[in-house]
Image 1: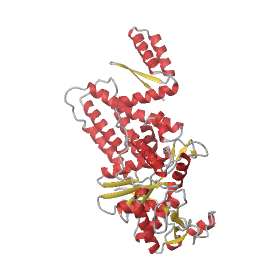
Image 2 (image 1 turned 90 degrees about the vertical axis):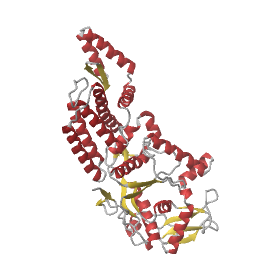
Image 3 (image 1 turned 30 degrees about the vertical axis):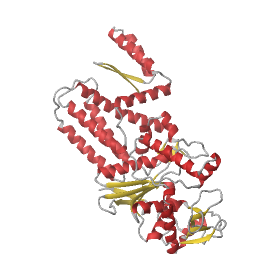
Image 4 (image 1 turned 60 degrees about the horizontal axis):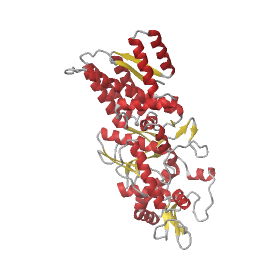
Amino acid sequence: MLKIYNTLGKKLEEFKPIKPGQVSIYVCGPTVYDYLHVGNFRGPVFFNFVKNWLEHIGYKVEYALNFTDVEDKIINRAVVEKKTAKEISEFYIQEYKKDFLSLGLTPHDYNPKVTDHMPEIIQMISQLIENKKAYVTSGVGQAQDVNYSISDFKDYGKLSGRKPEELQSGVRIEVDEKKKNPLDFALWKSAKSEEANWPSPWGAGRPGWHIECSAMIHALFGNQIDIHGGGLDLMFPHHENEIAQSEGCTGETFVKYWMHWNMIQFNGAKMSKSIGNIISLRDFLKDQHPEIYKWMMLTVHYRSTAEFGVEAIDRAISGLARVYSALAMAETVLATCTGEAKKDEKFETELTLAWQKIMEAFNDDFGTPAGFAVMFDVIRGFNAKNKRGMKPIPTTQSQCEQFIAFIKTFGRLLSLFQQPASDFLTSLDNQLLKKSGVSRDLVDQLVQERAAARLAKDFARSDELRKKLTDMNIAVSDLPTGSFWEVVK
C-alpha cells in the first residue's frame, strides 16, 4: 500500500487515485531564460523515480512538466540580448532538454508551454470573473488588468497554513490602490509597449504567473489531478494561488496529493546568486558523471535538504564505486563459470526478502534512503560470498546472475546502475586520478613493475612499489589471473 505525505493536511495518506489504475502528475517546471542550475533538476530526477515506481506497481501514469515561457526575466533577457522573448525561451527550452537527456531520465508525456495555452488562460480568467472570484481594474493605456480576489475564496491559505489576516499584518506589501486587498494577485497584466503581448477581452496583455499552471493543468487533465509536485519554495504563494484559481473556477477539489521537494544547499549554505554558489547542471556535468548528480538527489529523502558540497560529491563517488565494483566483480566471476548453473535457492530467498523491504521503503512516501540501505546490505552479503579470483562453487553462477538482475532492477527505477560496470569504474578512476594529479599511465607502469618484481621474487621492491601506489590512493589486488587495481577514497 503506497502512502504519500500530502502537504495539504501535513500527513501521510494512503494513495487512492481519482480513476482506478490511472495517475495524473503535474510538476512545475523551469522559467526558461538561462541554463538551469543543479537545484532545478532535483524535481525532475525525483519525479522520474515517482513515475517509474507508480508504473512498476501497476499504474498507468500521465506526467506533465511545464515550461514557463512568459515571464519578466525572459523579457528582460530579450531586451539585453536584443532578441525576442520567443527566441530566448525556445533556445533555453532546447538546452534544458539536452541537460535532461544527459541525465538519462525518461521523457515526460507532456511539456506544455504557456504560449501554447493562451486561449485556455483567457477562458479561465473569464470564468473567474463570471464566478465573482476576480475583478477588472484600469491598466496601461486603454487596456485593463485582472486580479484575483482572495477575500472571495474562503479556503485561501489551506495549503500553506497562512491566513490572509496574518499575512497582511506580518508581511510588508506594496500598496496598490487598484486592488481590493493588498494580497490580491494578477491574473492578467496589461502590456507595456515593448513587451510581448496577446489580445484579450481586456486589451493587449499577458497572463500572471499563477494562472498559467492552472490553465495548462485544466487543458491537459481536466478539473482534477492526482499529484501536483514542486519545490518547497513554490508552496506559497504559487501553489496556494493555483488552488484558489482552479477551485474558484470549477468548484471542485483541484489536487488530491501535493508533494514538495526540499531545497539544495552548498556546504551548509543556501544556494544563492548573491553568495555566488550557484552552478549550472551543464557546468557540473563537465567534470562529474551524471550518475553522481542523481545519486546525491536520490540517496536523500525528497523532503529533506540535499547537500551539494565537495564532501557530498565524494560520498556519491564512493557509493557508486561500491555498487559498480560489486557489479564488475559479479561479471568477472561469471566469466570464469562454465557449465550449467545450479540455482542458489537460499540466495534467491535472501533477495526476495530484500526486495520486499525495498517495496516497503518506496511505498512509504518514496523512501529512497531506506531502499539504498537494503541494497547495500545485499551488496555486503554478495561480496562476502564471492571475490575476484575465487574458485567458483556450483551455485556461483546463479548468485552472480541473480545479484546483477537485482541491482539492475533496483537501478532502473532510479535511472541508475545501467552503465557497463568496467567502463563506469574506469571513468571514476580517471576522474579521481585527475583530481589527485596522477596519470593512469604511471599507475599502470608501477603495477606492471610490481608484478615483475613479484615474479622475480624481489619482495622488497614489490613492497616498495605497493607502498608507493598506496600513497597515491591506489589499492592493488593480486589474483591468479593477474593484478587488479582501483582508486580508493
